[in-house]
Every structure is written in C-alpha cells, then in structure tokens.
Image (cartoon, rainbow, N blue to C red; front, side, top):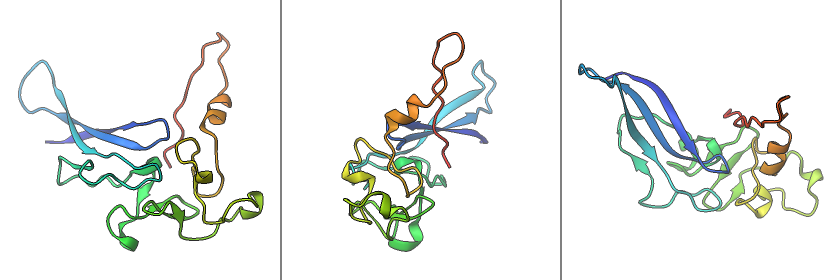
Length: 157
C-alpha cells in the first residue's frame, strides 16, 4: 500500500481538523485510488486538543501538524503540548507563548506573552510575531480581470 498524497481539511483559522491519504489500490477495479482518514482533531479556542476527540486511525502515520497548521513540538512538554510558530514556541494549554514578543513595542496594551490578541476565534498569528485579521488577508488577494475572485490558501510554512 503506497500513499501518494495527504490532504488537509482546515477550518477558517487554518487548524488542521482532518487528514486523509490517497492510497493506490492493488485490486483491479474501476477505482484505482481509495481515500482513508488517518488523523482527526478538535481544539479548544486557544489550541489545546479536546481529550478523546483527537487521534489517528493509522498508527504508522507520522503527521505532525495541528492547531493553526503549525508543527507540533513534542520534545519540550510532551505530546501536542507545544507548537512551533517559527519566531516563538506556543503552549496551547495556557494560551501563552514561552518567550516574549519580538514586536512587543507594537502592542503596548497587551502582555508580551499574550497570543492572538486574546481572541483566538477571530485573529491568527501566522509566525508568532504579528497578530493578523484573516479577513484582511483575504482582502489583499488580487481579483483577476474578469472580476472573479481567486482565493488562494495561506502558505502552510
């Protein structure tokens, strides 16, 4: 059984909720590929996984991404208890960063350990530095000449 592609199903904040695989079937049939769900997860607002609603159907799966599409860093605080955002490491259990904000002078009214402007339902923080309104990201997408909008997904990493 050879896995050809992995498909991530994300919510509006970029959280990877379900991952499925594209598997080539060995049997001679009209459908040469089958789809198999290998990982699934549900999250609390600040990113901690719900107990009992996250897991893997494929125990050999090495999928390592989760909340906001960021890589899990299991070496520091155990499985799914810290996420690598690039500029900083995030602890989803308490909703705080493990280091101060490199752009803390831009947000003087907030704690330098505060994440997502204390509003993880609305804001995203793509790299651990700047708080971003996802609606502003969509507005920056350039419309083609025929007035149809092409919505491109944000880069994964």
